[in-house]
Image (cartoon, rainbow, N blue to C red; front, side):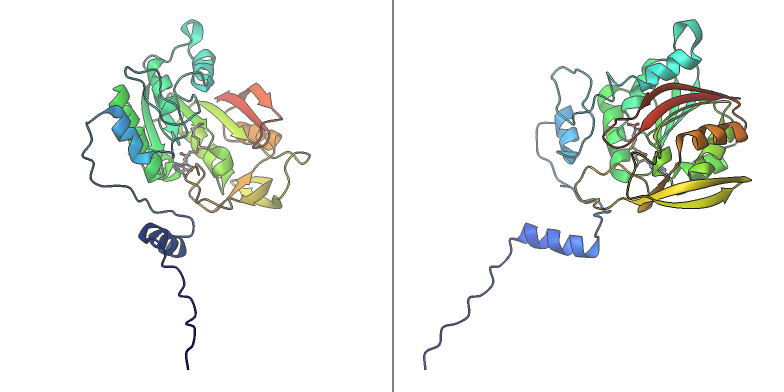
Length: 282
Ligand SMILES: C[S@@+](CC[C@H](N)C(=O)[O-])C[C@H]1O[C@@H](n2cnc3c(N)ncnc32)[C@H](O)[C@@H]1O
């Protein structure tokens, strides 16, 4: 007897199949994949497009112009200039300063610190971000040194002190934020820090627990990252991070030897949570 055959499920396209297999094996898409062979006319844009659609920063004006991301981290973002104004005296420059920058992402602040005269070593733990830093370095002719790895391990091993630690956007990505503050204070007599912080009225979905570190007993507020597969994840190396309350951050810098702590700017209404900018020194 004739029987209708059950319709066969549509065969997925090879790319969709590859993406599904990759997602099953690597749920956070923590491994990189990009096209290997490029038979284009060589150009800065061709190098930027290795990571097309995955850049955070826009580049400075170039001739011809290039298209990357939307954040003006190489240009308008004023955090490097704030560090220059805080530590550079009348000139507000950082000429000759040996700076260690933690988590440069794509090198935007690195570029600005270099423009202010600093001699920068920047430590980046995300290989995609690190490769973007190298692309930016090549396109913009930067001299800074970029290293791939965990800046905690770098600071633990470093012997020569730096003139300044520049730590923008990293403290709130730490599982042990007090350890990072301790290491920053050991690595230099001066620090610039921009970070989100925990505020009970504005931060929800965090889990609180008191954690001891180096004689300090501080309530930490932990939050998981959730989806990291969208190609615009610029977070930490673990799958969660602990935020500290504002005053505990200030108290920790003082406890670890940076007795001078100045709050330069506070923004309670940042879409990602309250944040502030501080400069500290011994
Ligand atoms: C939110 S982004 C901040 C980027 C930039 N500094 C800024 O302020 O715009 C955090 C950066 O720090 C890097 N990062 C986080 N934890 C790190 C660690 N333990 N070692 C090295 N890099 C880390 C991330 O990969 C990311 O590039």
